[in-house]
Image (tube, rainbow, N blue to C red; front, side, top):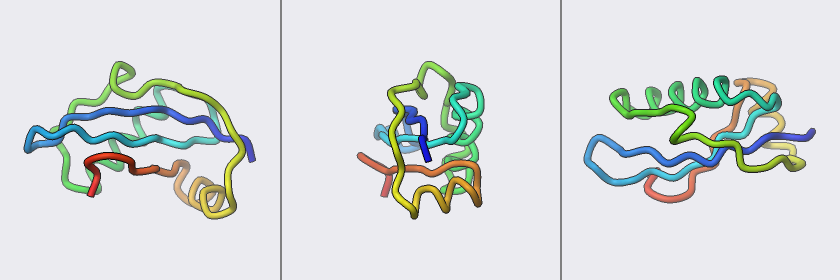
Length: 85
């Protein structure tokens, strides 16, 4: 499966920066922002500001099976990088 990667930087409630990628099957900027919002809410970051300014298309690539399974199940996959734990 070819996926689309959205590079995302968000300020957490405590002020630190969270850096993560949103992986989607469809190249759709608004959908990527929606998925980022869903994930942020799920981890308790309900007040985080997220828009296409913070969540930008980066590139497309092939995906490993576990990522494909998550996208098929949830519509997206979050790849956590900095400040997400």
